[in-house]
Image 1 (cartoon, rainbow, N blue to C red):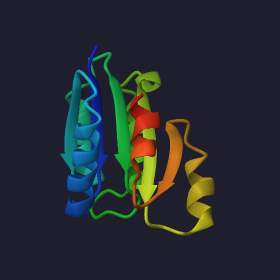
Image 2: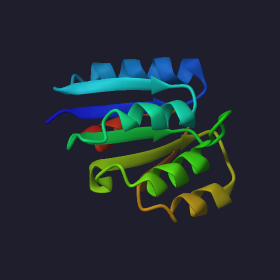
Image 3: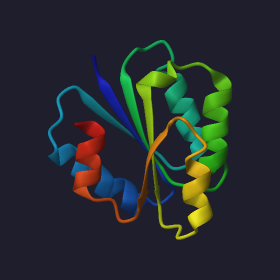
Length: 127
Protein backbone atom coordinates (compact mmCIF):
# COMPACT_ATOMS: atom_id res chain seq x y z
CA UNK A 1 0.00 0.00 0.00
CA UNK A 2 1.27 3.43 -0.91
CA UNK A 3 1.08 6.55 1.21
CA UNK A 4 0.38 9.99 -0.22
CA UNK A 5 1.24 13.31 1.41
CA UNK A 6 -0.61 16.38 0.16
CA UNK A 7 0.97 19.73 0.97
CA UNK A 8 -1.88 22.20 0.49
CA UNK A 9 -0.55 25.70 1.07
CA UNK A 10 -0.32 28.87 -1.02
CA UNK A 11 3.23 29.59 0.20
CA UNK A 12 5.72 28.06 -2.27
CA UNK A 13 8.58 28.29 0.26
CA UNK A 14 6.58 26.31 2.83
CA UNK A 15 5.73 23.68 0.22
CA UNK A 16 9.38 23.39 -0.84
CA UNK A 17 10.72 23.11 2.72
CA UNK A 18 8.02 20.60 3.71
CA UNK A 19 8.74 18.49 0.64
CA UNK A 20 12.47 18.45 1.45
CA UNK A 21 11.84 17.44 5.07
CA UNK A 22 9.45 14.68 4.03
CA UNK A 23 11.88 13.40 1.38
CA UNK A 24 14.67 13.28 3.97
CA UNK A 25 12.58 10.89 6.09
CA UNK A 26 13.01 8.26 3.36
CA UNK A 27 9.57 6.73 3.89
CA UNK A 28 9.08 3.85 1.42
CA UNK A 29 6.22 3.98 -1.09
CA UNK A 30 5.51 7.64 -0.46
CA UNK A 31 4.33 10.20 -2.98
CA UNK A 32 4.28 13.94 -2.29
CA UNK A 33 1.70 16.13 -4.01
CA UNK A 34 1.90 19.93 -3.79
CA UNK A 35 -1.24 22.07 -4.16
CA UNK A 36 -1.34 25.85 -3.97
CA UNK A 37 -4.97 26.03 -2.83
CA UNK A 38 -7.76 23.85 -1.53
CA UNK A 39 -9.53 23.57 -4.88
CA UNK A 40 -6.46 22.03 -6.50
CA UNK A 41 -6.18 19.78 -3.44
CA UNK A 42 -9.74 18.49 -3.93
CA UNK A 43 -9.08 17.90 -7.63
CA UNK A 44 -5.85 15.98 -6.93
CA UNK A 45 -7.46 13.96 -4.13
CA UNK A 46 -10.29 12.99 -6.48
CA UNK A 47 -7.77 11.04 -8.54
CA UNK A 48 -7.26 8.74 -5.54
CA UNK A 49 -10.91 8.15 -4.69
CA UNK A 50 -10.87 4.45 -5.63
CA UNK A 51 -7.62 3.87 -3.78
CA UNK A 52 -7.27 2.33 -0.34
CA UNK A 53 -3.93 4.08 0.17
CA UNK A 54 -3.28 6.20 3.24
CA UNK A 55 -3.44 9.95 2.71
CA UNK A 56 -1.86 12.57 4.96
CA UNK A 57 -2.81 16.19 4.27
CA UNK A 58 -0.78 19.14 5.52
CA UNK A 59 -3.38 21.89 5.26
CA UNK A 60 -3.02 25.64 5.58
CA UNK A 61 -6.02 27.69 6.72
CA UNK A 62 -5.66 30.97 4.84
CA UNK A 63 -5.44 30.42 1.09
CA UNK A 64 -7.06 31.97 -1.98
CA UNK A 65 -9.83 30.26 -3.97
CA UNK A 66 -10.65 27.53 -1.40
CA UNK A 67 -9.31 27.99 2.12
CA UNK A 68 -8.58 25.23 4.61
CA UNK A 69 -11.98 25.34 6.30
CA UNK A 70 -13.90 25.14 3.02
CA UNK A 71 -11.55 22.39 1.87
CA UNK A 72 -12.50 20.33 4.94
CA UNK A 73 -16.21 20.98 4.36
CA UNK A 74 -15.89 19.91 0.73
CA UNK A 75 -13.91 16.80 1.62
CA UNK A 76 -16.48 15.69 4.19
CA UNK A 77 -19.35 16.45 1.80
CA UNK A 78 -18.02 14.47 -1.12
CA UNK A 79 -17.86 11.08 0.63
CA UNK A 80 -15.57 9.92 -2.16
CA UNK A 81 -12.92 8.63 0.17
CA UNK A 82 -12.69 6.11 2.93
CA UNK A 83 -12.20 8.86 5.47
CA UNK A 84 -10.45 6.47 7.86
CA UNK A 85 -7.58 6.47 5.38
CA UNK A 86 -7.30 10.29 5.50
CA UNK A 87 -5.40 12.22 8.19
CA UNK A 88 -5.36 16.01 8.18
CA UNK A 89 -2.78 18.11 9.97
CA UNK A 90 -3.62 21.81 10.05
CA UNK A 91 -0.38 23.75 9.60
CA UNK A 92 -0.83 27.48 9.99
CA UNK A 93 0.72 30.73 11.06
CA UNK A 94 -2.57 31.72 12.71
CA UNK A 95 -2.32 32.53 16.40
CA UNK A 96 -6.09 32.70 16.85
CA UNK A 97 -7.22 30.21 19.53
CA UNK A 98 -10.60 29.94 17.82
CA UNK A 99 -8.86 28.22 14.89
CA UNK A 100 -7.63 25.45 17.20
CA UNK A 101 -11.14 24.99 18.62
CA UNK A 102 -12.69 25.02 15.16
CA UNK A 103 -10.22 22.40 13.91
CA UNK A 104 -11.26 20.04 16.73
CA UNK A 105 -14.78 19.94 15.27
CA UNK A 106 -13.52 18.04 12.23
CA UNK A 107 -12.98 14.30 12.66
CA UNK A 108 -10.35 14.28 9.92
CA UNK A 109 -8.12 16.79 11.73
CA UNK A 110 -5.73 14.80 13.92
CA UNK A 111 -3.18 17.51 14.60
CA UNK A 112 -2.92 21.31 14.67
CA UNK A 113 0.58 22.71 14.22
CA UNK A 114 1.83 26.29 14.16
CA UNK A 115 4.37 27.16 11.49
CA UNK A 116 7.18 26.47 11.12
CA UNK A 117 6.65 22.76 10.68
CA UNK A 118 9.11 20.58 12.58
CA UNK A 119 10.54 17.22 11.57
CA UNK A 120 9.08 15.59 14.71
CA UNK A 121 5.59 16.59 13.57
CA UNK A 122 6.18 14.86 10.25
CA UNK A 123 7.61 11.75 11.90
CA UNK A 124 4.52 11.39 14.07
CA UNK A 125 2.23 11.76 11.05
CA UNK A 126 4.14 9.47 8.72
CA UNK A 127 5.63 7.00 11.17
